[in-house]
Length: 163
Ligand SMILES: [Zn+2]
Image 1 (tube, protein in one colour):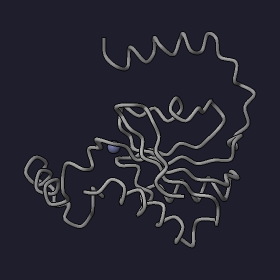
Image 2 (tube, rainbow, N blue to C red; image 1 turned 180 degrees about the horizontal axis):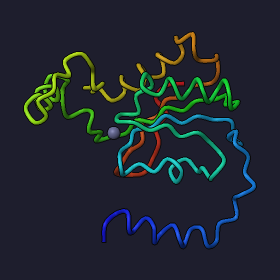
Image 3 (spheres, helix red, strand yellow; image 1 turned 180 degrees about the vertical axis):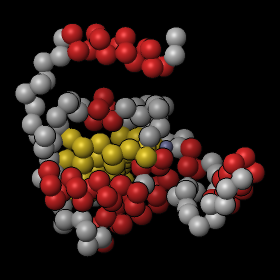
């Protein structure tokens, strides 16, 4: 079965007992989570979030510079007032350099992507510190509580590394 066929079957079950239709658009817990897209990290389960609670913005690495557009929308239009940044152990972003991926794209797709960065990193803790700092310094982001975490994909535990 294809992934899409499995999604449709799973959704039938989900919708059959769905009772969250009353939820409001603004996140109830007024929080934004920026997390890596890694398949082993489930922010809802790992952080105890339910439908309606939070904005969860995901991308490769959980890089905040890429999440900025969504954070501004979240704060300015939907009232969120706290941010959590979640990177994780064994992240794929630790495994390549911009030069590596640029050359692979050039080779496989025949495209020149030398003008943009894929935002890889070589130091996990530093990547969290950098991403929280980007938000703290940005004039586009409100002066709210911003906490940076590393999620351990082996233990499921969250370590606070920057607050
Ligand atoms: Zn990752």
